[in-house]
Image (cartoon, rainbow, N blue to C red; front, side):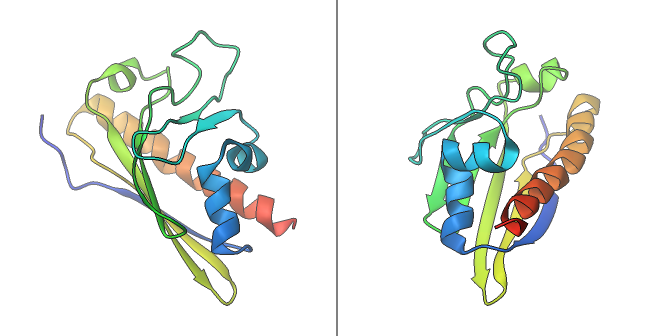
Length: 151
């Protein structure tokens, strides 16, 4: 399997402190507040980073089950393994996983968030997943912006 240098990169400026934005990504309550989905998050290396987009589906098909935190620097960086939705079984069930890194930078006007999704192999199924997440991550950051714009 050849890993490409492709990456999805999205940015947003959030009307909140780095501590508030960090909480939004590193706790189940924070994720539920801006994405309106249940989650299981434990901020430790190897800790779960699971978001349940369809908690009525069968176990293993609800969301990001099996995804884990792979590194973090408090208030600055979070990275986690990521899978694909159940509609993309080849990528979702593959032993190889891509990963997402979030970088947080507090400024005088809010907190900049840079999301980078990397580790994309070559192949048609991986390309479909890439295209899906290129749209999906934009939506996720828009929801985070909307959540904090109302505060």
